[in-house]
Amino acid sequence: MTEPLPEHDVAMMKAIGRGDRQAFEQLYRQTSPRLYAIALRILRRQSWAEEVLHESFISVWNRAASYDPQLSSPLTWLTHIVRNRAIDWLRSAGGKAAEREDEFVDVEVGSFAEPVEALQRSQEGQKLSACLEHLPIDQRQSIVLAYYQGMSHGEVSVYLQQPLGTVKSWIRRALDHLKDCVGL
Image 1 (cartoon, rainbow, N blue to C red):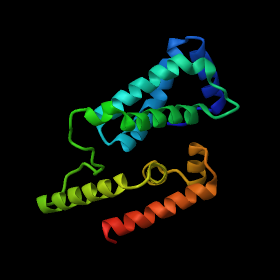
Image 2: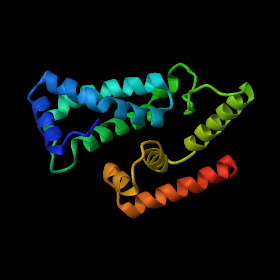
Image 3: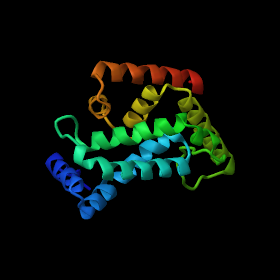
């Protein structure tokens, strides 16, 4: 699947600002998987990520008319809304008081040759998740974008609207922390 052209995205945002429900549905279908992944990486709970994504799209619907293509691309604008909502959720009393659920563990699902190997992979995934949780949010988000989403450092820089040198520093510090934490 190819990425839509930015001009198309800007036109879609303008249509949403005028109340076009079909454009909103198209935006949701194109961006919700990526935005959900961002919320899930920050929040670590599926139900919280779903709630934040829902709130974020309500905000997009209500604020689309205020979108300014001179300031950022539509995807960057949407990402900032989701990221800020997720951070607000973590800081809020609602996020802390929510019922406990199984934590999201980023482990590949597949058939393993032996149960021992499956247990080991699961434990490694849990350790990596625990190590990621100890990173500052900027470093964690940079690592996730670079290594889980496959973005280059330059793309992460544009995506987060941060200087390239800052992003490279965040990624280097995060890798050093993860290396020490995981025990490599």
